[in-house]
Amino acid sequence: MTLRAPANGIELAYDTFGPPGERPLLLIMGLGAQRIHWDDDFCALLADRGHHVVRFDNRDAGESTHFREAAVPASGARRPAPYLLDDMADDTAGLLDALGWESAHVVGASMGGMIAQSLAIRHPHRVRSLTSIMSTPSPRAAPPTEAAMTVLMTRGAADRESVIRQALLTWETIGSPGYPLDRERIARVAALSYDRCHDPAGTARQLTAIMASGDRAPLLKELAVRALVLHGEADQLVPLSGGIATAEAIPEARLITFPGMGHDLPRPLWPEFVDAIDELTAAG
Image 1: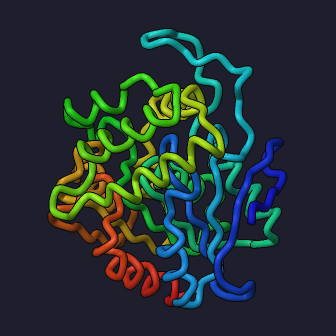
Image 2 (image 1 turned 180 degrees about the vertical axis):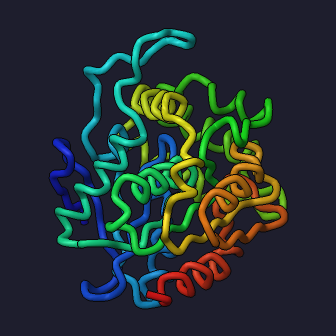
Image 3 (image 1 turned 135 degrees about the horizontal axis):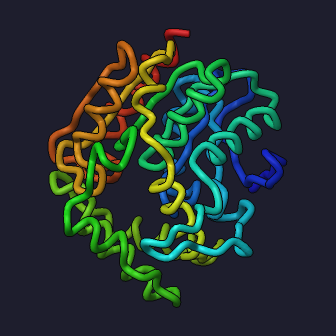
């Protein structure tokens, strides 16, 4: 069931797994992705470990507020970005307010990891622990391969079937070469995402926010938060250098890398992800 909350002057759509009163765990998804990209079964695994899990749609994604009136700066343009990752971090802090959570364990994937890092920097008292998955302190620390950049910059498909084909091509390129590609799940999530809200311009605005936001590494070095960094060794979109840079920036962060993992969350690795996150959150 979709729930809605006011946050930072906008509205965020979210849903939950697990009973209230368990360890609060907030999941932040990546570029252009909706909250359903956090698989229901993955969320259920986290809930089974004693977490009250909340996943939500970022601004300009899914059922949350879209900034359709904001222009998307053209490549090379000097116009300012409509918003920055800091604004998306403030959205997240606003969601914590609406949930009545003084603080939470925060898990972010890709752009979601960048938002989680910004949240910990801007609102350190709100973050009990930080898990950054396949992310980076700045795009310069982990430039994508040419193949990954090509699919990232592909113009958004217009109709439902084209969206599904484009999603399959994208994950064939940047997914995990060491694990079978779950084509059925990719097609199903792409179709559902299209049905819920198809907004390629929103994805472009999010990408502009990533590129316009500064290097977080100097401020990450000042954090006093328990941190976990998970990263695939075969990631073409955010190469392993991004995970290494994140772990090196956050004092005493634990880095776990996975051979054969690309820029996705392969189902066979879910038990290892959940074990590592549970160990981190159980520490307090």
